[in-house]
Amino acid sequence: MSYLLILLVLLACMALLDARWKLFLFARPLPAAAVVLLGTGFFLAWDVSAIAAGIFVHRQSPLMTGIMIGPQLPLEEAFFLLFLCYQTMILFTGAQRVLGRDRPSGQGGRA
Image (cartoon, rainbow, N blue to C red; front, side, top):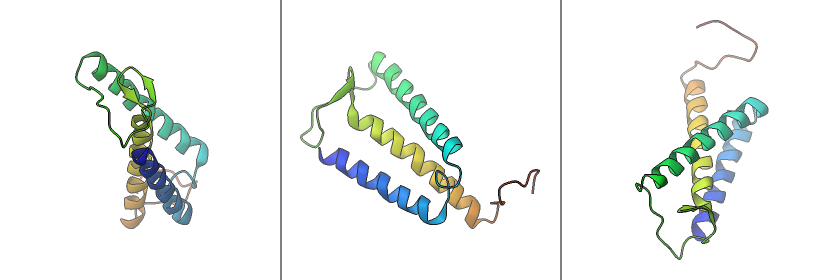
């Protein structure tokens, strides 16, 4: 249970950063949500294929809820992948802004 709570706190922290500086989800909610969900879905499919190939194996831990969303696929893995995708996009859009490559919406073309 501890691991899931940590992941939820980290997701909330990313959302606070995003809300404060409108980097990703708070800048363009629908496209950003689609990107995060597609990325999370891609990595979940990757995990499922790795589980089927015998590469990933779940081990019981007192830090986990024990809830499985698939064979060898704990609930926490889905939240971790969601966090990973969201964090990556926050870092990417934040880096663009810091490096001065962020353009106001509506401007097309290359810089």
